[in-house]
Image (cartoon, rainbow over all chains, first blue to last red; front, side, top):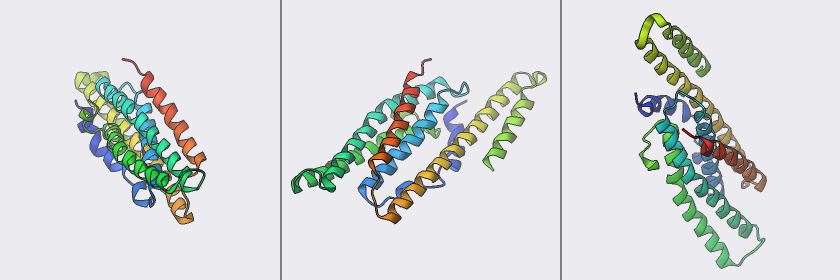
Length: 131
Length: 90
């Protein structure tokens, strides 16, 4: 039996009550929403790794997806750090501020699909995105 | 509500594990265990997402950005979960 087909409807039903992305307004808040969602899903994946009922193929896919998502998420945090320091005036010129803002937007857009892959697998969706 | 559904599924699973039901009972038990697991994990994720949603609502209402301490707290959780996931071996 395929776990993915089995879990998908249930997890979608129970997992989408609140959407932090709709609430966040600024790029820093949106980045925090993305990183926070990643952490929640990563913690769920960590719990699922301990369940004997979860097939090894799904665990391998979660492991691969997390191995890709973790450095991407941490890169997002670094980009936020850099942007925040410029924004509050700790360092940098106006050019630095523009670069930091553009860099954060770029990293955010690049990170999002990588994190969505992990979310998809943990929610019981297609594991092929981790290959 | 999700706790009740999970409990119900786990109860059915125990019934299905009766040896008198043979291999079919074992298959039904696996399905029910997975269903209960899905409900439990889904409910846990929903609660955590709701908490994150609330936290962001407060940030927006207060007109502030996430603090370094809030970021560090998230990163510490991520580091711990990442270690657990990557330590798994078949």
